[in-house]
Image 1: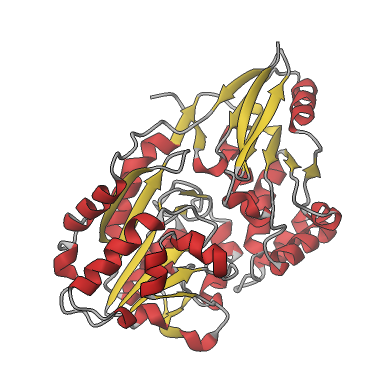
Image 2: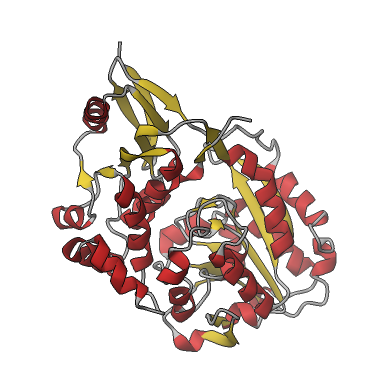
Length: 430
């Protein structure tokens, strides 16, 4: 009798039918209790911050404020905390025109119109204060704070640098380069100049063995992000964690580094899941909407399960890619990788101090390609886009799974329904 599993796909689920003889291991995060009253939890976090005075005290006598929010690629529950933040500022006497919310796009596209409304999630906020996008390529929009010790030029959006009160907000989830998302990452790359982003995304950083998901110790990207925060000065953060249903399970507020570390401590044990063996067949997703809107973001789902993938095995990933590739620059990087071959392409990257925009994602994709057969199921890419993915396109996840199990002569497989939001690692349970 066949079995079925559900993968996050677009705004819904993709049902995968497994062969009768298949022996699936379903890998999910350890469930965390939902917060019954999310708005009350936000207010409580503002009243009892991490390494900071209560919010009502913090905002007194401030002349201006800039609040950073993540772009549409992250399902951050902005609707829960933006209004309390703004209301607190206005209650302390700050005029609405001195409050800015900036979408930390990094090098992603701007979020406008209905998409911006969805992102903010609260019409009152949009009607009350300015909500603007960051543009990493606009030189005049950035303040040059000088290089870090590693030589990264630090140029940050002046709206954030010049604000009297600086707040970032985000989602604490695994990140395949920087260890964990949120906190300091919302600043850089979030509101950094393209030269800043392109420097600490060059091959010197990307190929470092410590630049991996869920690792902050010795991670050069994380350390560079902390160095950038230090140059900016006083920064605070709202950190959120959500479950598979996108419901809030954690929120805190406080000094950006300390509060982010506390949130990471809270979520690590439920996100990093140890398994005592590797699998020759791994089936995963790009975590569904909004992460799987583009092929660019899909790469994260390919990299995350590498620790439990048997070298020479098969990695099958499902991603809708409803918006196509993600950027012209990423498309060009993929085209060069396909036409030059991975080894020659990587050699060109190692010769650069400035990475070309988005080619670091191609560099990350080559990591699972080196060790396994990578197969992609998608409904959103055209023929040329499918060619330059550089991976094998499959018409059916069901058929790809059956073929992989037969090819490897092993009925066992790992299924990761929520893709890069859960990190399986090789190790003993417990």
